[in-house]
Length: 166
Image (cartoon, rainbow, N blue to C red; front, side):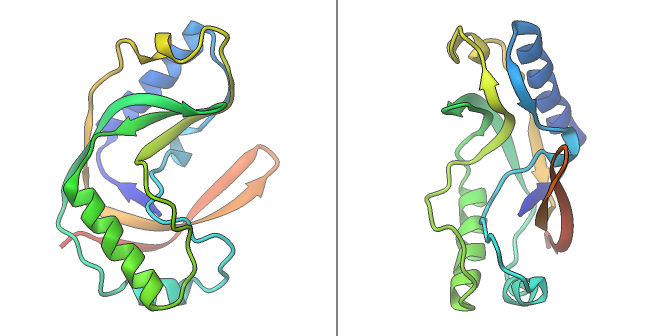
């Protein structure tokens, strides 16, 4: 699922990527149209109509998320999202709706982040990359259900359903 909101946050994420490139990070940088925050990873479930039916009672008011730091999972580098009760309540409602409708999803605890580089190589470690990160927020007004397909140049993400803020 992908959150939707302001372009200022996307610009800041692209600024981080450009800074990291200039510092010498090598890897597969995520294209702007593929930047997303996963709320619930559903995986190989072939009926998006069932998912959207399950999510139809889920409501949320617009809320703001903010970039807060960066980090890595091995060779995947990401921008962090500041702790946010509205985001966590929204995730809880989405996951509850999926579980109630027996739609399988990855139940790992959410660590809100937006992946910026995969297969990253940077001999100096993550510490220099954490300096001078832009601060930006994004008002979340929509959440997209995303299908991911492997293309010859990486993943292709397509919105196949949408929840709108009330």
